[in-house]
Image (cartoon, rainbow, N blue to C red; front, side, top):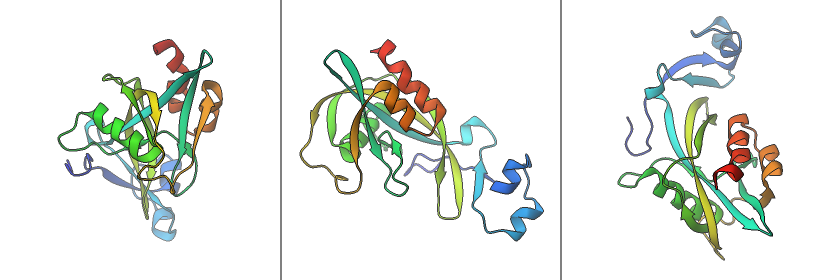
Length: 180
């Protein structure tokens, strides 16, 4: 395990073409194309692990979720990052929310759940499992570490679920009202 980034070693299996073809070995397609490759974990213990905060507030009796954009693709997601050495996972998620979204509040110590996504690298993708911790926002900062690098926006629960690409993350967002 790479302690600096909370990553576990994973196995390279080939290109997107071989993945979509159902192959778990390098296929002839991978040898001829320069498409990004994917790294699939052999076992759940080999996946890359991240932590995330699901920032929310209650406004006029309705729950709203704060989403941020990714720096590269500008798609909507929740603040997330690698586990931090010496910090409990929920504390690392809380720090990610402050750095990426400029919010502070009360974070739950137990995760709401998890979702998986493909992390884009320069020449391949890695499968990451993200543990999600609800964060009830009590303060929005005037400035924060990544303020100029990302957009932030409050959405009602269903709209936030529609904005994210990962179906499992959308379901976690939809499950929030029953859990707070």
